[in-house]
Image 1 (cartoon, helix red, strand yellow):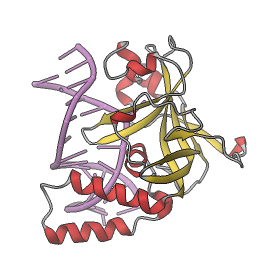
Image 2 (cartoon, protein in one colour):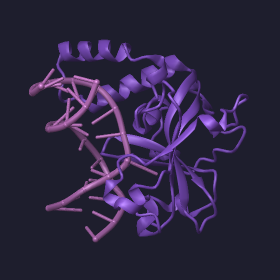
Image 3 (cartoon, protein in one colour):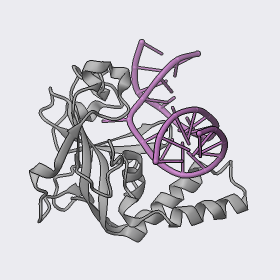
Length: 202
DNA sequence: TGAATGATGCACT
DNA sequence: GTGCATCATTCAC
């Protein structure tokens, strides 16, 4: 369960989709160029957040895993909202407006807001960029200890863990640039048929 | 129902 | 200068 609990309120959700990224040897990983200013936390202790900006507008949350020399991480790709749905929806909408501030006149804004309001609660955090938006995260959260039971952003074990047989493995999304060997590794994991998964058919 | 596309900031070569 | 661990919208069928 991913949980944000701070002055902004409390929001939580079940993690239903992730991707594993290896260290420098993994051609799809941000660690592939070795340590840099952006990925430095990947080369540190496990359990801390690594948030990066992708395509100039989406903040994506990773959990650093393994030892410092392994420099591996897990991308949180989708969450099923449990608490704080209204907060998630508000933050998501706020970002959508910021993203399109130059494009929309009043009528288009109203139409976009109506469409956004129709997005099902189940799908507010269905995708790595959507997780970042729903939980109000940005790169400033990089370095946060996600295992601190009193921290503002953390990961906890669910009371009802999923049956391992319902977990599906498949290739990672959007990493074709890494070449077939690495792009083909089945390192994306999601709950079979879950409504909050980013690509139910993937 | 699915493919194509534009938006947008920055890490990296 | 190139291209990205994405998403929402538009347009084709």
